[in-house]
Length: 516
Image 1 (cartoon, rainbow, N blue to C red):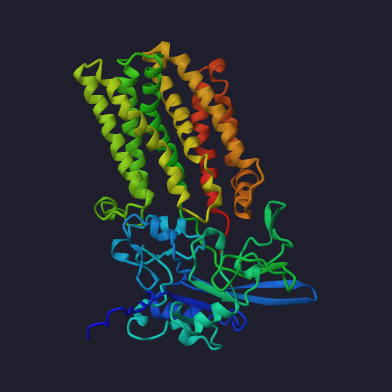
Image 2: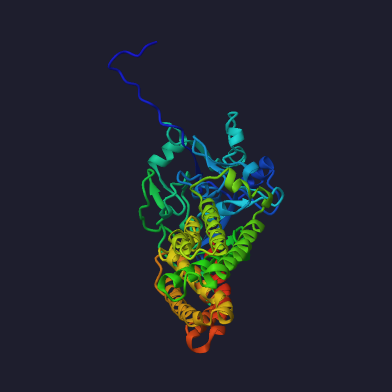
């Protein structure tokens, strides 16, 4: 029937499926965990959902608080942006779902999630998490955890449907979300949850080499009627001790730490001689730029690619990174940058073989920016890990470029000592300057008082905790590079080697802080 002229219809907003977890009703029975495992075939050792308990208060007024932990179904989901193949995606109804068929097991989604809600299934080696039992919702059934909960503590519904149970609770009562400062706009709301359960670092303070709970005002995770966080006074003692938790492995291990080092050497292999030629310290036909630098770059670029592929849980699906790419992911953008850089290196070798004396300077106009991008893009890859506050530093990109100068200059020094003795001193000076700049930038990341507890505890882990030996041994070695013009090029090699354990401490410490 045609619509009457002058009348308009009110379009209903698209559905936004959310979940309300009523912690005032949760009795910590773990029925939701076992039902989820049974329904979704989740193997032993990993969980899509689990119940954490925290002892809250001070003796003799102590009680046990529970919190159901799972994927937060974010409106702005960091895992979706970080996934290079689109295996993590957001449906029209607001559910963040996953497609195991195109997962390459890169763990970028795990690193990106501020809630530590994603894991690699040990049986099929693909990423998974809670998806609201989407297969049940599609046939009119409620999620398994909702059905099995004996106290009705779990509710699922459409936030945009007036009168729905979840909409009424969120609009009329004080509810909380986890880590609202990350601006992911979570779709999981907590009713009556204690701050000590919502934020594992709400009262954490380094003490004697470990993390201990201490007093801290509660309530900064509270939201009312869907609006940003507001403060409220704590009604109970905030001191708490975790009595039950689930440990999760670090997403990126030693291969990623080593990758940052090999990629720095690769980028510096061309970057350093091209800069020296631009400055007039060496000629454009110098063997360092013509052959040594490009060969070093290609060799370490090959090592970098090998590390990246070997770190995948599905290495045979590596091709999907380029054939089924999701452009917001910096894994995809980084792969494009590295391919462009490889093309620059091959072009430089071809030019050198042709004997042209003019073309290297022309190529440098393209090659220098690409080399800098190859060195620095990892900063943006790390920045997509929103839950890792130490990696959100605005100086990380220039810092990685400076590391590439140090690594490239140090790697070229042995060849320069044999083939181009006149280039040794400029390279030693470059090592000294970049080592000093690196130490200053690392100090700027470590010494200041960080705004968040996550960043402070990451720095603590790096400088005084489990990675302190690697960090300080590497720092001392890098400091030797500052004296390279006086001690000789061997000091530069010590600095190059020192960047490996120091960088490993930086990469791992940022991931060591608990998020759930």
